[in-house]
Amino acid sequence: MIEPFRPIANTIFRLALLGIGGLVTLGLCMGYLVVRSPYEMQQQSPREQPLQFSHKHHVGDLGIDCRFCHDTVETSAFANIPPTDTCMHCHSQLWAASPALAPVRESYRTDRSIEWTKVNVLPQFVYFNHSVHVNKGIGCTSCHGRVDEMPLTWQAARLTMRWCLDCHRHPELSVRPEPEVFNMNYKPPIDQAEMGKRLVREYHIQSLVSCSVCHR
Image 1 (cartoon, rainbow, N blue to C red):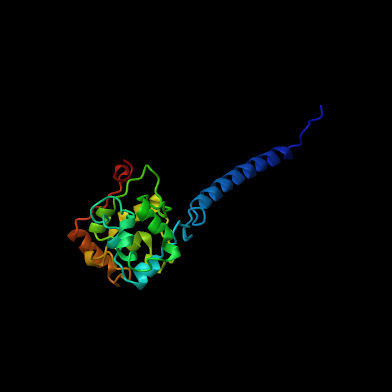
Image 2: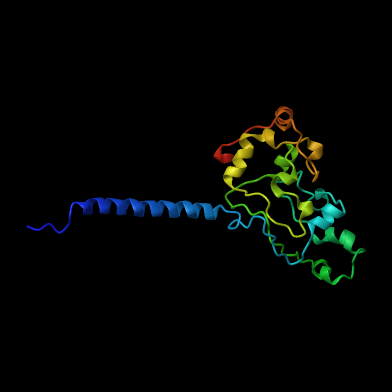
């Protein structure tokens, strides 16, 4: 009886299976890398807004402190988007007739909030408390980057779970003196690790990495 397949067919079949398995694995790895890539996460991509607000102008050029607009950042889980009334503190007098500020005047007149596009977006199942981090010596730029250099705001950090855990496991590498939390120009000292360990003890910072800390 003539055999339909030669002995080498088994080897070819095994190599084909290995090749298919390798391609599937490669595809999964590539998909994972793409999903976590800066492009897919829109990292470093300026967001279009209904009003092209420039942090570079307000924070960098004029030196306005973060807390002037985001006045709940030290006391609340959320760093509030400022109401239009905050904008009008200045712009009722400065550039009061500028066409670029028409959406601000319209919002103030109608009492309807401007619908800003959120830049740093976390999943709904992730809990993040701004006040805890700010009051423990974590600077704004650690997560938001140099907003004082952003004409249009973009997401500076990856904001993945691994990125958060790296900081939670080694807070001494990120903590800074409390007076420097809102300082955009702060530079870590050469002895950051040594100073950080001292601040971790002084501020009673805990290295919390259990699931329930962020997933509630």
